[in-house]
Image (tube, rainbow, N blue to C red; front, side, top):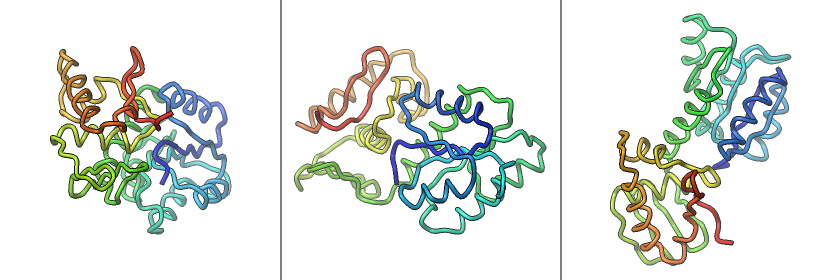
Length: 226
């Protein structure tokens, strides 16, 4: 499953491009699909982490797409957010009952959509159950263990959660406020809390600490060592 691609299933080009532009500004990669078949073809090659899905589509509706994806074990980890002009209570309940994780009606705020996508990405991080690995760095989400070249690295709970969040969303830049909300669950004025934990985490990771990069005036990102 791709850790940094959002698929957009939307036949209105202007809306699709707006969503893609908003994602790009948050350093998230996206691909746009105008119909269900083109989406299915892409999923055969690479599974996304989040799907933004319209309902009223040509040939096959978004609701049908959701039913198809939820019936396939291969796609169980995809988080789906419906973005639709259908805004009645029935439409929302129906979409969520079919397996959507969230529902946003048009017209919509791009900032709100991005916030909801980030929330789904954070939720996905908590559901990871496979071993994550980059070269000699190995993360076991279920057992909260980290090793480098098979040697166990002792991390605090918050350090582990920071590493897992950044690693699971590679190339996505998280602001300090994002990290505070995601890891600590509340907002505080003193963002030094994040800086101190990141500094300690980098030290413990040794060479791999260089993967956690500080993008000046923006936030932190996990990226491969150049």
